[in-house]
Image (cartoon, rainbow, N blue to C red):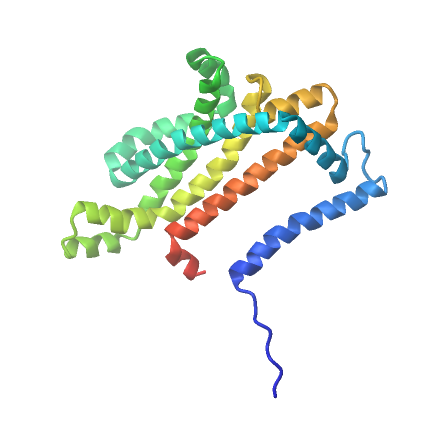
Length: 262
């Protein structure tokens, strides 16, 4: 009998395996280099030392307090920025007059570093949770808006012509042509804005918070507790990986035809 062929892993399974194995390999390499004193432990602790510090912070409940504060601000600001960003982007993509009116304003305000607006936002919304949520929303709305607008503009005109020839009403045109056609770039904007929102929330927590992962990193650095500082950095990294994974899974559900063609 001919030997049986081993079943090959699907492309999705291979990608998931590589996504898990590559960080593990990096951590192992880091630990090996730390074991031979390649890094100065005073400035770059080993993964085991960071894990021990993270476990101590978890046991005391301090890490959960900071993680909860940052996550709530991040989710609230992301939703508050993404929803109007998608809505305005769709309108700008569909209406050239609205696009002509708003495009110069967006071009003028988008390059401003969002964290530079934090003092003004704190004056308007106070030093509480509102200012951190608003600064994240401002960082998110631009990227989502621009990508959504470009997603509408890049839809091939033939789809609009076919829908009109078949007499498709506006709601069906919107749900069957415009939204599906713009979704790939909408999700690109969401993923980009998630990364930016993590940067912004950590930066805001450096100077305008008494809790949060950014506050943990800053206070640990100021007191030279380097292991705790690295714990905060690792937590932000994990938040970025988890949020990206969730958005990719949501994209797979919303755009199944795109996955099938890759």
